[in-house]
Length: 52
Image 1 (tube, rainbow, N blue to C red):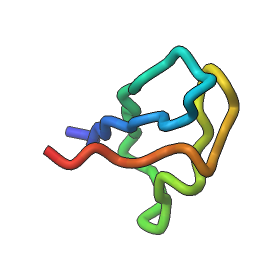
Image 2 (cartoon, one colour):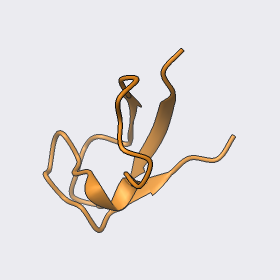
Image 3 (cartoon, rainbow, N blue to C red):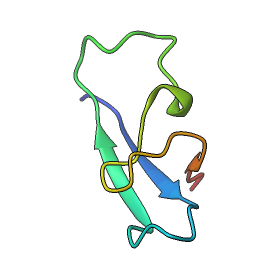
C-alpha cells in the first residue's frame, strides 16, 4: 500500500493546522516535506512532518 504522511502547517496566519498527504506507488525515494507546499496558504518553509 502506498504511504501516507501527516503534515503540520506552522504558519500562524494559515487557518489549516494539518493535512494528510497520500502518495502513489511511483513517488521518488528522495521526495521530502521540503518539496511540498501547504494546500491552503502555499507556504513551504512552514511545513513539518508529524511523527507518530
